[in-house]
Image (cartoon, rainbow, N blue to C red; front, side):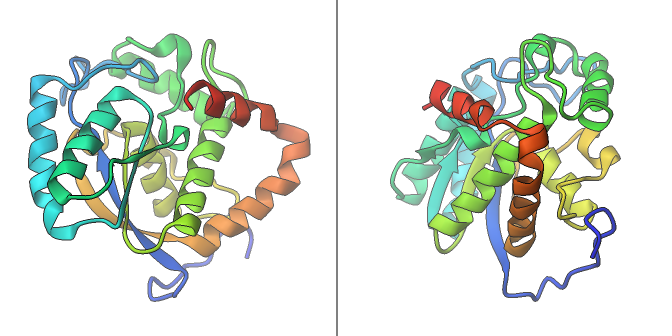
Amino acid sequence: SSPTSPQPISRNNPNWREILLIRHGATALNSNDHTVDRIRGWQDWQLSDEGREQAVKLAKKIRVIRPDVLLCSNLTRARQTAEVISDYIERPYPELSAAFLPWDVGCFVGARSVDAIPRLAAYSIRWPYKQVPGGEAFATFRMRLFKGLLNALRCHVGLVGIVTHHRCERLIKAWAKAEYPEDGSFDQDEFTKKGEPTGHWEIIKIPVHRLELWEQWLVLQRPHRFHDSDLDRITAEHA
């Protein structure tokens, strides 16, 4: 099938794996009101009092499911959320991974979401290989997240829990809505719309075979558009 015109795939396929996708608890910059909500990016905010309460509520619900392993981004708000969950479900402390950092949107950090989202949409759709000033290209962010998902599912059996961020949740959902194209393309409206609230969790099915096909596509593209040094730099900075 063509990467840009994927064929529908059956969710009964044995190559599907489930992940427990968790968005971190609230910080001082989060708000359900888009006119107040601010872009966080890689700015390292701690959980607010509301965020800590959300983490406890999350943990109590997830205790019934008990993921076999818990991964999270290196940022404090994700790590604090994951640590609360780990305590409640009696699992080892979470594995930190730079793969699950949000998109580094550089100069847009601190801007009102309602103002920044249209401009970020242009970087993701029109200029995916162009670096955001002070940040990273959208294509680098997508490569990092998809590689992280694939590696997590290759390295861990059972239910993998991932505590991550709004833009990661949006990209996974947008790729799914587009029927998982092999070139990593995605539904633009789904990616840019307001996503799940802080403290949200859900079980999502991931087609591992489509991630593997994307990996093959990436190998063909890399000499022209990608540099391993981009991913190595991000990993080293957040090791």
